[in-house]
Amino acid sequence: MKIAAHTLGCKLNYAETSDLLRRFSTLGHTIVDFHEQADLYIVNTCTVTAVAEKKCRSAIRQAHRTNPDAEIAVIGCFAQVAASDIGKIPGVTLVLDNTQKHLLPSIMEERSGKVKMPSTDAFPLQYSSGDRTRTFFKIQDGCDYFCTYCAIPFARGRSRSASIEETLCMARRIADEGAKEVVLTGVNTGTFGMHQGESFIDLLRELDGIKDILRYRISSIEPNLLTDDIIDFVAHSRAFLPHFHIPLQAGSDHVLQLMHRRYDTALYAAKLERIKALMPDACIAADVMAGFNGENEEEFSKVLAFIESLPISYLHVFTYSDRPGTAALRLGEKIPIPVRHEHTARLLELSQKKHAQFIDSQLGKRRTVLWEHTNHNGQMEGWTDNYIRLARPYDPELVAAVTTEEITPENVVRESVV
Image (cartoon, rainbow, N blue to C red; front, side, top):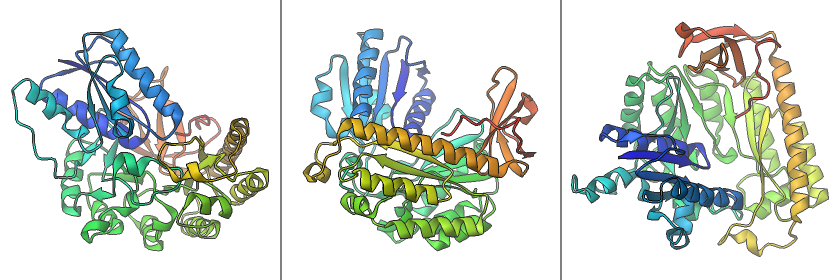
């Protein structure tokens, strides 16, 4: 078969899609672009916002227009929470939730009579491929937190993970395939191992011993799970980089309480203070939600002031939207949608300011850079250990190599914060 895929949402989804396509390719199928004619289209969906769900429906319709005779498999979080509605969309032939989607290659093979379905009990360790430099490695899934705005626990289920031993076996396979940098991904990554008597910090220590992997990043970790031990370990480890992604969501204690977040602004600030004390040049990103219930102008002024006071390097900003089944629907003081968008714009402006300040603080310093393979009009790009994108003349000998470079106004790619 010819198989195409389209992924929406988080890095975890991208790792899962890449893993599926790699397994289809191993089975002898051909992977094509999503805009091309295919026999099977895979749409890996997201349900974080109403906009994400709209994009999911659009991708399904696009696939059906491209080849009305093709099968369309819709998988992921939107498929989990709205399976019956998705099944009614023209062209959709298969809907798999998050407990089933890793079985898609086996399901398609079984339909052709080639294999029997495997057991669904084991945790599906998955990783992205196709990039000679960076791999996204799914080590955890699900969440036990049930924040009032979030549908992800309903979409992905309770927190779960493989054992440290199983995770290390997969990491060694990734190393054997030549990946130089591994990004550890999950829904609530810091809860790794909690349900089997293991811990995230113990996993980090073991991963650090795989010498063929030069660099690790932690994609995201909750402030209350970012222990002092983890911060201290990253500061002195061989391969874990000084780059943290720590969700904030709101810079107001009142709004954090409405969200049922498990920390306050004082704890969040203390974590950043400890990071910067041990790693002054660390890059720190934060997720922030704009326009959540209760975020009136008084509370939003607290949000801006709090973020201004923090050594944050950039923000990922999301506009709040009601999600079916969440507790936030019962909370009062709804923020008008135009105000939500205004708050979003102001936070994005603050993020640009913070990012420019962070880059300026690094000018003249020397940092290690992992160079990527893409040739952009004679230029190649790479990320420093503290997540600043640099560019230089393309040199095929430097692809997937790590060099030490001075950060200058001429080699910084300022507009890239992803």
